[in-house]
Figure 1 (cartoon, rainbow over the protein chains, first blue to last red):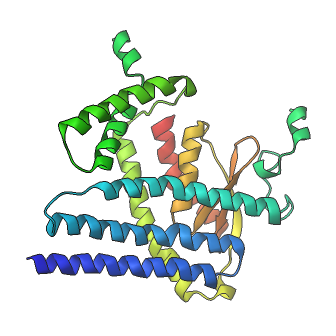
Figure 2 (figure 1 turned 30 degrees about the vertical axis):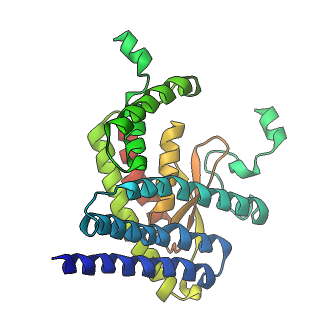
Figure 3 (figure 1 turned 90 degrees about the horizontal axis):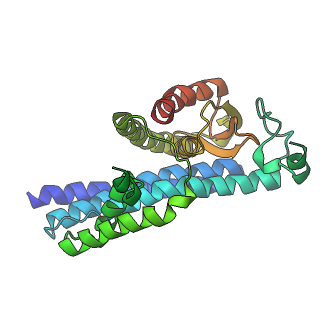
Length: 123
Length: 165
């Protein structure tokens, strides 16, 4: 029985490793800055997720105690990954884009990153 | 009832903090349960002035539904992005910006939507328009930006609207 669980744990570890690799490989392979941001934000979620599932299984099966720490890591990852990505994206918009290179902001006048002090006074 | 509302201004946060504390301790015992509850009561009480008008969640089953949909989409997103990274030559990929008009008004709802967009297939939230009516999305591979915009509005925004408004 334990053997099957070992295979399952190994499977999750391998999947995690593959996705971790894809995330890092994407950083090199994709050719513009914004696209590079996609690889680490997404591919790593399943990469880390796989390790965590393997860890929960391992402690439940081999060490006979329930360890749910890992769920917290997932929770924190889901909270922090989008925010980090957003910060990096904002820096990119700030340094490498102008309002002309981006699509118009619909019914509003501009994107928040380009907002200037004078604009605030007017409104 | 009023006294209860004063002691537990935010019952869901109390439960969440207790559960998070128990998970951090990683071993169930009466000690950690009591201390978790203590934190769960004290923290919402002390931080109450900082959220004067928080939005009400309208329906818990819909929250669960939303979380499941997003979790599934994250798994799918991983495979889609992995395929693009590994097998699609850069020249054939068409990255691009999309402006998504949003109808959500609660800041919390917009935050959740922005986070969801970042975690799901090939899209990433970059910015918000100055008055909060549009999100600037970057797509990893967007041959058809209108389809992506419609999917975000249909799949996530509609559900969030039902939850928050």
